[in-house]
Amino acid sequence: MSRSASALVCVLMCTCFLQEARANQRSTPNPSALDGVYKFVSESTVLTRPEKSETKRTSSEWIGIWQFQNGYFSSTMMKQGQRDITCMSQRPHLFGYESDAGTYRIDGKYVELARDFTINPFEVGRSLLMEYKISGDTLILVRHLYPYMENIEEGTVTIVLRRVK
Image (cartoon, rainbow, N blue to C red; front, side, top):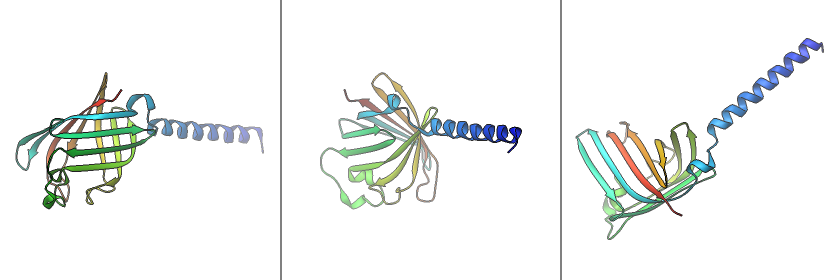
């Protein structure tokens, strides 16, 4: 192999390696940014469609733990008091229990939660893309709702969590 061909192969290999390293850097979570255990503080949902409405859940009614660790996440939320199981298939949060788990990926100011496990069978495999912001021990997640086949709601959901020390 000629010297110029060897140099070309070397340059191509280095370029491929650097592109792969850059792609891995984008998709690998930053352990110091999000990793940890968080308690649920509140959730505000503002709908613009099909009807304008606003709802809020707080830690006085709901308890919950969210965990982010090494690219994996889990969240468990439970309503305090009695649960009505008759509405679980349509709206699990009305049942009083929610649970998701899977992997997460950070891309800039967004975190994507790939839900491999969830109590709602319609949500398995459906990822959530949320804007996140950390301020001290507070983690704020904002999800924009867009209509899809099973749910025609549009709006935003803002979740506030507090890091457990």
